[in-house]
Amino acid sequence: MATRIDFASLSLMDALDLAILIEDEAKERYEEFAAQMEQHRTPAAATFFRLMAHNEAKHGQELADRRGQLFGGLTPTVTRAMIFDVEAPDYDEARAFMSPRQAMKAALASEIKAHAFFVAALPALKDAEVRALFEELRDEEVQHQTLVKAELAKLPPDSGLSDEDFVDEPAAQ
Amino acid sequence: MSATCEFQAKDYKSDLKPIWCPGCGDYSVVQGIYRAMAAIGRPPHEIAFISGIGCSSRIPGYTTAYGFNTVHGRALPIAQGIKLANPDLLVLAAGGDGDGFSIGGGHIAHLIRRNIDITYIVMDNQIYGLTKGQLSPTSQKGRTTCTSPYGSLENPVNPLLYTLAYGAGFVAQASPTDLVGMAAIIEEAIRYPGFAFVNVQSPCVTYGEEAQQIKGLKAISESLKDLGHDPADRLAAMDLAQHYGSKMHLGVFYKNPEPPATYDAQIRERQIQLSQGALPKERILDLFIKK
Image (cartoon, rainbow over all chains, first blue to last red; front, side):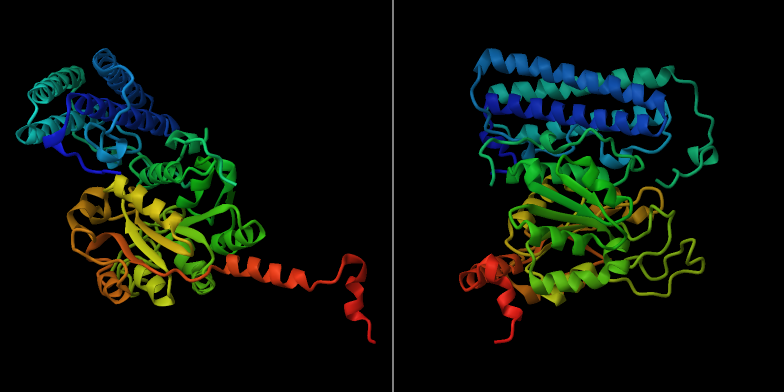
């Protein structure tokens, strides 16, 4: 089973399937983060991560609909083993008792990371339709960054104190 | 034996939600295990997942396999008993570096020399996290903790060299810096017919040092495949294993190209041999009657 993406030979169907897998991975990671926050009584960050999971699911569904219209039920040839942490926040971005600001910053970093992935892939693409799709996805990541930045701007300014000034370390389990 | 239906990673995920600290490396380890289990394709009821005590030893509960969160340091003997009692089960054992190399350290050698068909996954975070940050067997020399306020005077155990030196047929290292690679390594370890050891550098987000967090580990990661390492070369594996603590080599260090018979298979064979000459039940006491 191939575990690396051969961008040069990527077909439009493969590209759409990859994009769906990327959204799925991000959705699952945000759900995991939300569950972690709920377990650690951090409801504000959990709510934000649930919102991000919902957004990723929505994008994934839009891509899946498009894929369905173009290629019906053809079996995908790309797998989850070909991607890791493309749009999903890194596992170590989660922290006990993270504030909504920290949660949003983690999401923003993920959108920047996803944008970088599509930018880096573009020079290797040979198929014009795949290139157009990747450019579209790249631009969407910029829009997502703008949305997260707008949400960040609505938050009250930082106190300048770190979480360690307020909270105890997580209780022994 | 195994069913033919296909399983997905989510089929191995239990309803129990992990309570590790957010950011803990073990979140990614459990995902790697789900993926490896799905790739193997054995139904959850054919898998027994045994652990000791510690943060990482909670892991069996987060899977749908049969699980036993046993006592400190005793995952391996219990896993061995389960495998010998029911050799058809796929048996995994897991725990932390403290559980595996301190109180449980004596057991590893015996499972290796017997070559029991078990995959042992150690989530090595170089600290006792559950008990709030004491020195563990793999803590670096000089490490300051609540039990070593002036810095540790002890050299760490090298889990890779340790298991290679005892003669393990499969020794590998993985990390949450590469979840896809970790899942593939765990799958390969499970498929190896014999005792397989996987050391996973899984950072403790609460008591671990900054350099041991995922970003720090990424900076010192090197794929053994990219280095051109031949996993059949045991001496080369031992040479590379010496870098434990300074570099993080990811991949299979050693895989015996000609795996010897497992202990469980030999026992089964002997049982078949002995059963041929065994007395019928009604004459079993004849053995004790002097003629």
